[in-house]
Image (cartoon, rainbow, N blue to C red; front, side, top):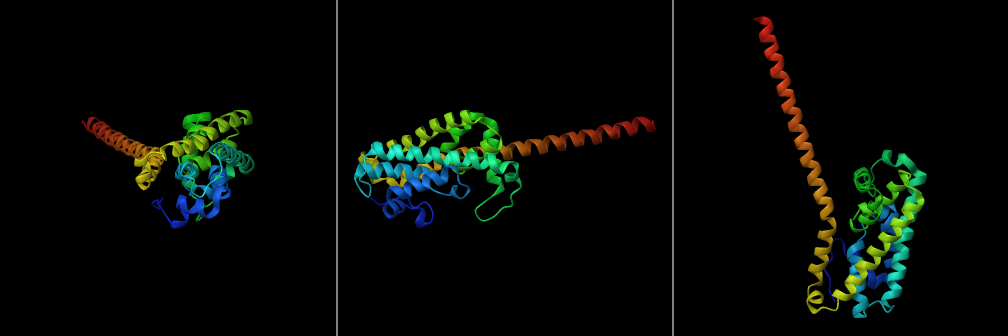
Length: 234
């Protein structure tokens, strides 16, 4: 099977799996789920490719149930670490300067996502790149109840880690999918980043509307002031 690298060759899912095996997959899932440095890792496409390669019997010899179980544990553990990190770091995370591996805008996006969806964000964020890395950290910063976080973390971990892998396993047995896997991976990445694109477009539209309202109000105030001066002069 040949896949299309959706970035640097060392981030290509098949390359990662063929080079590092199951241990590498688990490490990446853990890191992307809650470590600040893991936001750029290929979570969705990696899980899908993992399921596909299990069906194919290439690189991975472990049974599907075992791989899914380990992936769920890695995903849940990653979010737990992220949550505890957020509880420890607290609001200072919002004052951290930008660096090559850290962008303040990612924290802001995750915070907006968390405020919009509340506890459900722990589940929904699993399917949104970058946001899934920072959301458990934001939950810790916000002081979300631990029991509530654990519940949603387990549900999200199962749906994401197991769900996407199983999807890859069964779709990988379809000839059309196997023959067009590079386009399937592109579609997965496109669908996963779509929520981010939508939110960015909404934010820009909101800013434009706010600017237009401010300009209109400013013009109205100027006109009212002019009429007041005219009446005073008369």
